[in-house]
Length: 226
Image 1: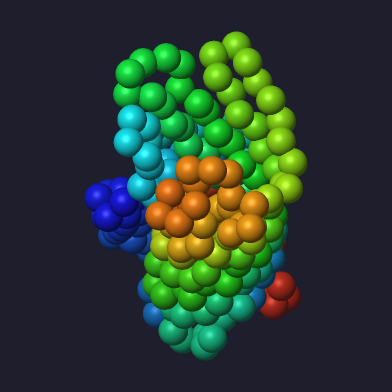
Image 2 (image 1 turned 45 degrees about the vertical axis):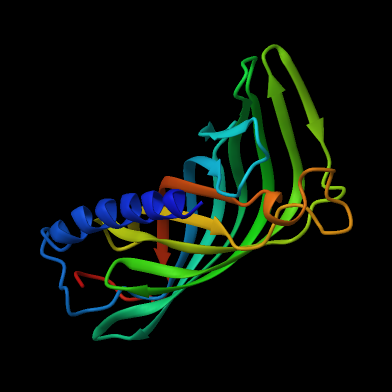
């Protein structure tokens, strides 16, 4: 589990740092904050189960069955410092794969949540918490596919680390690149409903990495360059 967390953190940091080095190349002032705004983003995600698994089972990377879609708002702390708060509500996917070491087709899981998040924003980097309310999901094994409900799934609290960068700006707002890594610090199954073999340390803890694009509309009413 620690190896998975370290890898995800490293990927998010390197990706965010590479964009941060070029941030402001279009003449944007590094000493001036983004205005208050709200908008929409779309993202694609891959993930793993970062918890321990029973003997004979191994974790694998899963790809989301559909895109994440979210609403996002930005509240600046101060006009002259690049700090603020990001708030979001999203329909989010949490994919991962489990397989038997003895062979056979892997089990491909794709859980879906309604996520509500608050994150600190500092010069393009973000860190915060996500509360995920389960809506269900799917499991695919070879040609077999089945949908399941949220019965037995608990509210999932996740740490979020990422980047939030402007790609293009005009008088209406700004296009953003969103990079977000998450790790669930609570188990996916509610304690009273966890299936046999998925309790305690074996309760699933999804970790994910998302890349997305969005548009934030400026709400301060000002025109012209910033």
